[in-house]
Amino acid sequence: MTVIKTKDDGWTEISVEDARAYYSGWFYEIRQAHWPAVGIQRLVFMDAEKTRVVRAAWEERNPRYRELHPVFFGKKKKVQHLPDYKEWQRLAKERLSKTYTYSAFGLSSPIVLGFQVGDLFHGQDGSILQVIATGQLLEVKHTSDKRSLGYWIGEVQLAEWLQSGMIPDDKYRISKNQSHSEIAKFHEYTE
View 1 (tube, rainbow, N blue to C red):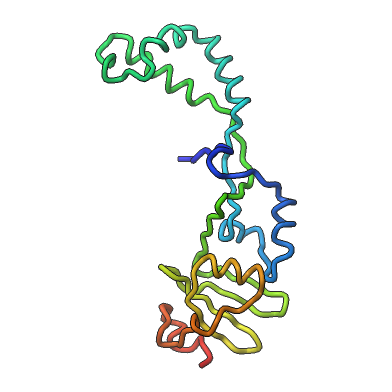
View 2 (view 1 turned 45 degrees about the vertical axis):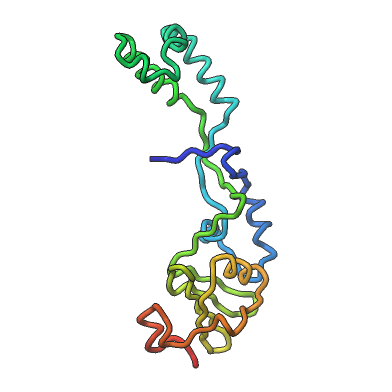
């Protein structure tokens, strides 16, 4: 099932060019494949004005809907036993399906982050950030100068790191045996 968003749902439509410009100043490269991880998602939007026009045209072709609407709208428990109720349900459902939708990128407010295991980001200095494990905190591997360090940080902290390039405090560092990744436990992190 497709979830249809309206601009009132906290999502703002954003063009591809604006999204690229938004991420162009970030320290780590944010490719289009990673946009959902950092707040921009491909969505189906409903255009309210065009939908109103489409539904009005449908109502003109279906006058029975207008006849039944005042009788049945919002009164299910009181009227569901009446003979025309099934017809009303069918017409109301058909009318609701008459929407004008389009696909576009959307930016959520507040930002909805969604990092996944395997997300890989390349920094301007040649460093690499990779999401190793997810959970209450993300396990992130930072590779730079042939040295790998692990960190447990939140999604917001990772987004800030991607934007600024500032490495988190050492209090977020983890050792091999603290890793949630079996591979990292044995040979990923430099001590």
